[in-house]
Amino acid sequence: MESQRYRQRVGDFKADDRAHEFRSGLAIEKHCALLYSPAIFIEVRKEILKGLLHCYTTGVEEVDGRKVYTVTHLDKRSDVVNEFTVKVDPVEDTTTCSCNLWRRIGYLCRHIFCVYRQTKVDEIPAKYVVSRWGRHVLPKSVFRVEFRYGVDLSPVSLTRNTLVDCFSEAFEAVMGDRAAMEDFVEKIKGWTKEFNDDRRGKRVAEATESQVMADMLGVVVEDEESTPVSCSNTQGVRNKGCGTNKRMIGPGERAVQNRQKPQRLCRTCNRFVTGHDSRNCPEKRKTAEP
Image (cartoon, rainbow, N blue to C red; front, top):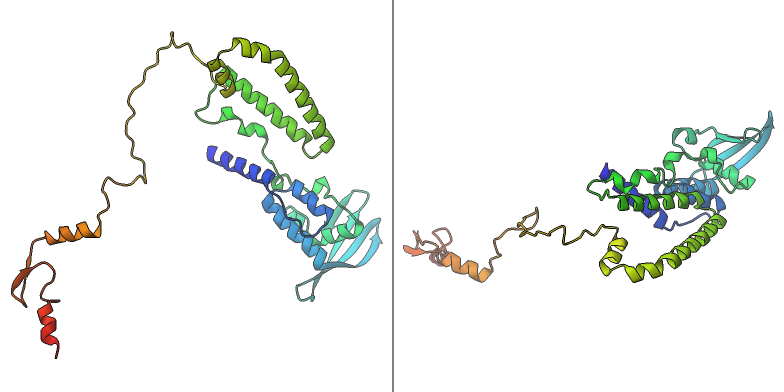
């Protein structure tokens, strides 16, 4: 679970830090970048581009208060592949397509984007945004520090974590609304200035250096006189991949070691040697030469 949550946090960071590439120039594509995760945005962007380049409406009629569009889908060779029907109901505020891509996968198809482009719809309705494909699907409370292993559960640490969670929830509430974010920034600046004015003089005058560092790091400093400190020698630990104790032997040293090996009798030259045997004896090669 800790590994899965770590990968989720990495994915959320990449989604916030990544700059998307817009290819169609349509406002609805920029709106999709704010709704979907990077991987799903790439797939939705393909549908938007194909709806722009390979789809066009060939007819529209009104049936029972609904507008029925006939969308022709072309391939790369500009050949007609198929025709699809897109129904727009202004009363129920619904848009459906005969290809049923939204029902099968969870995002709109190229035929609906083609109709949206002609009707000048710049944002995807909220009912057609599936939460599992969105950004920041999991709430921030899932990633709280107290849910991890081996963390500090002291009252100071828990209070600090609660403060961070409150800030994250407030940031999610105003994210996407520029006016609300600017108001939130001004309030934070005012609170920060108020806290600094109230605590700066007292904190600098009375607190020691160790206490100031402890407050910055969020740790509790114990009294050294009441709590003796005992240290022991560290034990050597050999982890996987740290290598062996054997050193590398060079070619010169290896040649010296080979010279110290026991000699063998060569049946061709009848001598005890270490460099050859009867199969590759120099005397045998001389005899074989004409």
